[in-house]
Length: 222
Length: 243
Image (cartoon, rainbow over all chains, first blue to last red; front, side, top):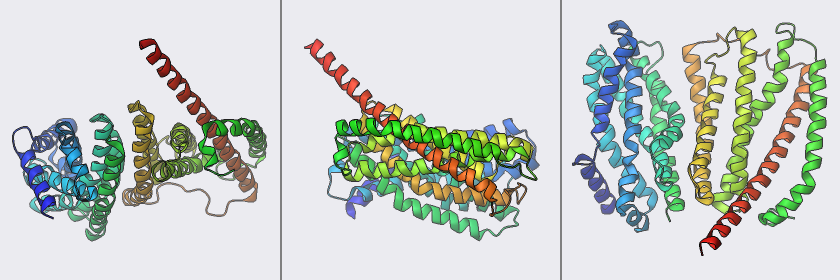
């Protein structure tokens, strides 16, 4: 347990310090959201209607952008080999790394959401609904994305390949995230149904993600 | 002869060399019969002659999912039993599955134009098949991104199994999304009871297309084995010249 806690602490510390680049995701999120009105026009009513979708897409792309770093840096300096060889189960180590990554790169996105909601003319209730769905949904993005990150690091190919592999898998999270936000803002459906499915998707990804990522690291690293 | 005996590529090559002509012949005959029966099938009272697109469209759609199942079995063979031919089978199946999925999309779109008045409708089935197609393309991209075949095989096997778990979830969520956005605006095929005049040609075509897949898959596996041998010989030659 202490080894896992140490791993989480180390990863967060590396991510937040110089060269970590976890906060670049927030900057990207901000930039994408600011670019959207230039594309769809400055109509505030339209932006209110599209707001949850814009925020969800921005968060999805921002979390995808930072996923590349989940294993690459550790692979480059050799610490990934130490983690694979250590006595703790690799599945747990992968889960710890994903958790640390979500705390360092996913949580800031949710904290930034209220400010971005202002730009998109969302009221306080709508913004908090979107933030709540992001809180429930972004762990699923991180944990399924981790599979793509593990595959990419063992193949020495990052970037575009990672995006192509991970994006189709994130369709359910996007659907239920946006549906839950819309249900909270306009109805007519109840907020509970899509939100519980969103939580279920996150829970499923906690199971599948670490096992698939650990399998691909174990098979892939020589 | 068991599955383990087939692990020897030379045995596999000699067996398939004997089986393939028969398979190809049976496929051709069944396809001819199926096409004839489809052409002779009566027009639908509502859809007219366009209903005949179904005889091509439905077998393609079935196979688009069936091929992913075959690849998942091959992925288990790669990861669990380390069967030497499993990764060859998985690699050979991916482009064929992508082609079937693409044909299902194209024929569906051509069918949709006269029936729905549009080439593309964000219908739940169409959308989930489109995502299946994207996943096939991602898998092929993964195969092509790595030059070492065994390394690529293990990565592709993991992605295939993750996809097999996720595809039902994606299908379910797209269904949900679609009913939320456009309730019952899309016309459905005439109910669950399909007339015998349509059912028999459809079944013949389905069997014919499945045989077509088996034939193409075995031929592609042979090609892949031969390609690997050529590559190994080229590497040997290069290292001899260097020495």
